[in-house]
Length: 381
Image 1 (tube, rainbow, N blue to C red):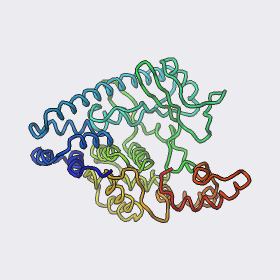
Image 2 (cartoon, rainbow, N blue to C red):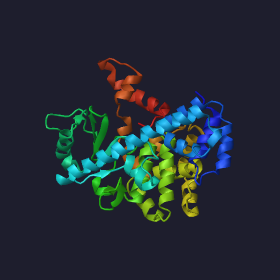
Image 3 (cartoon, rainbow, N blue to C red):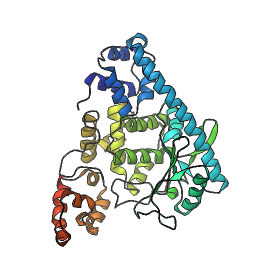
Image 4 (cartoon, helix red, strand yellow):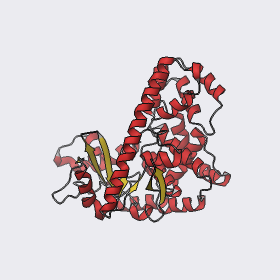
């Protein structure tokens, strides 16, 4: 379904840095003919709080029923943000008492440290990174707080799937959701670098969250984590692009040489380039000229950025056509080479079985099906 062009124009203006003058936004708001479409699009891209705060300046340009609806959604988000912040502080305290280091990322900590206001960003789940060795003890901490573990596990408490790095918890009493991770995922599930607490913890900082001191990612690593996450999901939400732009605005003195070296070592250089290009083109993030030129000179990153920007509202999450599938295009050359040498690309998986149902006696033919399926598959996973 094609997104309403007036809504798209206004949303792009709302998230631009620096922000447009109120009179200009008022003119754009006055052109909106379908407010339901605008609110639906803003909700889909998780930017309703930002939309409300900017439109609150508009006055009569926004119909009263729309303003009331936006205000109600904003108040609801404020409640969830404050609830998430209080719960996260309590969880970190409980983990600390058990001598379990934990690094919160995304969510309310990102909003507080980068946006400067934990209510400007939608409240999501509580995401915590821990050491793998602390998983069982951290699980006990959450179970004692009334959470239920929904991730399938073996009898010894280890994950049922060997390539899964997250435990998902929910608390029925209040709907709170928490996730424990011990490894951050890259684009290609079968080719991950070991990015976990050993990567993020030594360079940690402290952020203020609702008056409490909590661990926070260093700006350089936070940028890579945001670019990793956005690239994994093909930047299908405007919020993820805004996150990168806000982080860059909050840390204008970022050490770009160190960030790029770290990105190269961790297999995230092209994900970094893609995320920064989108933050610059879509949200107006200011990037030092030499850094921007280097990212723009990468043909694959520039091509992906153009496609994602063009299809951000009409086909979010779509990957461009081409010889290389999306997740391969994002890989560094060494990772591509390792993948080729491992012959992993030729090993059939469940997606190949889903494309064509063959009896067990003919399963060897999936080695012929797979190359054809990969050629036409443009999904990120």
